[in-house]
Amino acid sequence: MGDERRTESEALFEELCRQHNVACTRLPRRLDSKQPDYELVLAGHRIVAEVKQIEPNDDDRRFTKELLRNGMARQCRVPDQMARRVRDAIKRSRQQINAYLERRPATPAVLVLFDAARNGYTDPYAIQVAMYGWECVVFDGTRIETPLTVIDRGFGHRNNRDVREDKNQQLSALATLHEGWGIDTHERVLSLWFYHNQFAAHPILPEWWSGNDIMHFAFGEKVPGQFQDWCSATKDRDPNRGHGDAS
Image 1 (cartoon, one colour):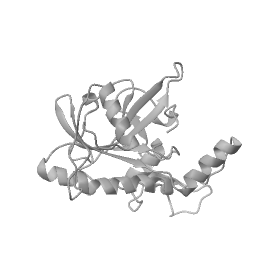
Image 2 (image 1 turned 90 degrees about the horizontal axis):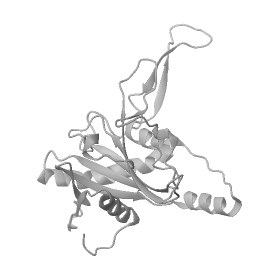
Image 3 (image 1 turned 30 degrees about the vertical axis):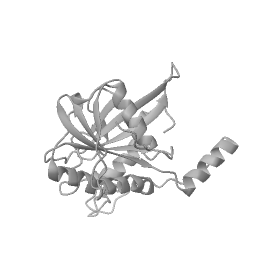
Image 4 (image 1 turned 90 degrees about the vertical axis):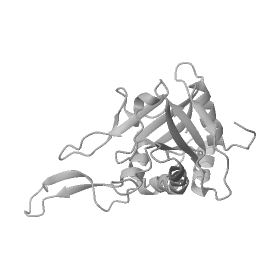
């Protein structure tokens, strides 16, 4: 794949592809920077992938330093602020992916995101808020009651979401890359968790890339009165149980 210097996330992603025998070709850098990082071949299908990482900011570094020094630390985590780091990565990948799609239309595209800050930015709820926005509760305001009557729970129309019917359809899925250690074996494990965009113009099918360390999640049908959540698109596993790793 060449001798060009890799970021941590790119080196880990290439290693994961080798482990799964996935054909992974590094795309050459363009002078206009309008080029994703990789072309993959999954089950005979060409996929384009852009790999980005979330770098630690001052608050992340303070939190990590305090945690290592004291064995515990406090940090105020606002979901939308956490999700903003993910939305920034989606926005920065848009130009690169779209430039590729001008040359090769109808190619499924994935943004692979690695949390180099190792501070929860790629947790399932942070990804949900980044992609689909804030959750809201709708109350019946026609009558004064105690308690108030809830009409519905779900995503509002103006809720800071980054994927919808008319936005970011080029993004087939956002995948989070994780470096961890096996619970029983304590061996190093690389895993990739796909969060599929329900509005994608060209979806990626879970069976194209499967395995013990490859997970696929999507939103199920909306049930009136209930919030939506990630559901496994492959097998029964809850993404909110965590990755068992430090990233």
